[in-house]
Amino acid sequence: MSIKKIGIITSGGDCGGLNAVIKGVARNAYAMGIETVVIPNGYAGLYNLIELDNVVSLNAERVSKIEASLAGSEAGHSRVKISKIDDPNKYDRIKKGLEKFEIDGLIISGGDDTGSVVVDLSAQGIPCIHVPKTMDLDLQPYSVGGDSAINRISVFARDLKTTGMSHNRIIVMEVFGRYVGHTAFRGGIGAEADAILIPEVPVDFDILYEHMKTTFLARIERSDVKAGTYLIVVAEGLSDASGEMRYDESAGVDAFGHKKLAGAGKYIRQELEKRLKADPEIEAFMKRAGMFVPGIYSIPEVREVTPGHLVRSGHSSAYDVNFGYKTGAGAVILLCQGKTGNTVTGVEGHKVLYMPTTDAIKRREVDIEELSLFESLGTCFGRKPIEFKPETVEESRDARAM
Image (cartoon, rainbow, N blue to C red; front, side, top):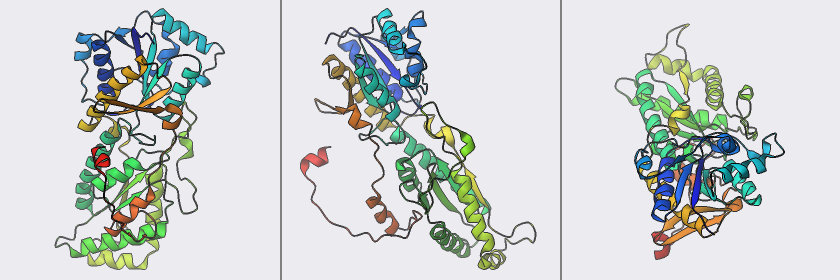
């Protein structure tokens, strides 16, 4: 397949590592004598390419201005699904835009929705390679942005303990995750959160409350200055013991038709406050701790915090910069070899790894068998703890190399 010019698109939500993907594509393409151009604003830019006067060429000078360690994307984003565009000629319009700028193929970085459009465009005869990107980590392969988000969540959650300790508060931190809890789980463990609530485990609020009460009260009672806090990290896709998702329905839906999940932190706060008010032991505790003030302060404060887009902003982790460079460079090789409609999953030594995008975008949830180890270490997942039953297995040399 003859490729002389590549168009690069970043789509969906922003996150860490994307600028490294862009630089990996541009630098490897340059080394192979291929020009790379930016198609700005995600799939919206692809649809409107025919209307643009010019596109930015990522020559050596322009690429040097991109900082790989910064999160976000120099190419810009939009949440647009091509098949939903109300234009019967949309694919012809896209092809004409590509012809206008003599773009031979596309490298597109994004998550499951973005990947579904890669499949769609490939079926329309437009050569595409997908680079996995999502801070939710819900694709089958690792996705750029995940490690950055986990580290940001961990830092913010740890930092919140200082205000929690100062006021003896129960802190509920709600983070992105939609239908999977990878980043809440890993970020929560990194912050040593007391409880981590993920979509894969319906929450029994009575169990959560008893863990919170036992842990929080004991901390304050042991403290010589009567200080303590309790930290909960929750993914936005919270579900209760009935399996029903709890979110603010007024948030609406995004351009891909997904419900905008919000309100999990608020729902948890309300459930804990309701139980604190009904618990006859709490007033006695508040008096023993010197915290009780009639009519003003009868139960411990519960506060929800939603860092929102802060967890996907700022700087990329070193891991994501490494992964972004490798997969960006690998995508160029796949495109030049005509392996379109595939997702690059990594580069190991001289091997560029890939899989069909249709397989890559299948949802990957948290393996809940992992939770029992952390439950044995004291973390609550809103369920009755399951005994950790270890099985020792010698790892192969090849597995360690991965």
